[in-house]
Length: 149
Image (tube, rainbow, N blue to C red; front, side, top):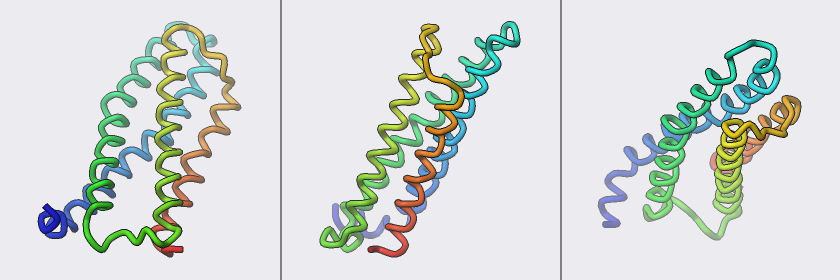
């Protein structure tokens, strides 16, 4: 199995990066949809159901599969011999940041359920501020992996 992981390393790494890009796109875009949903749904008749469809499809068809693929390929990289030096700080900062992104993903999913149930209490401003969370985590991950602190 270890030989297979080592042989598949370039493929695994490529698929991991592709998955991360797709996941990040959703993590950046869904909070923006929530901002517009909060701020425009009451102003424009009939637009709330459109936002709900867009939000559901983004989360279910793009973000969830991308998150799962990111985790699967990321764990495959972790178990590939010689890739991760657990004595360094960088794998721990990356792991914590990925856990933070996963938490944020699930937080967004809970907010979608609030919208669907007509129970959203989060303001557009709050969604704008929360939209910075994946950016900060992305910066930590990229610098951790590239500089291997």
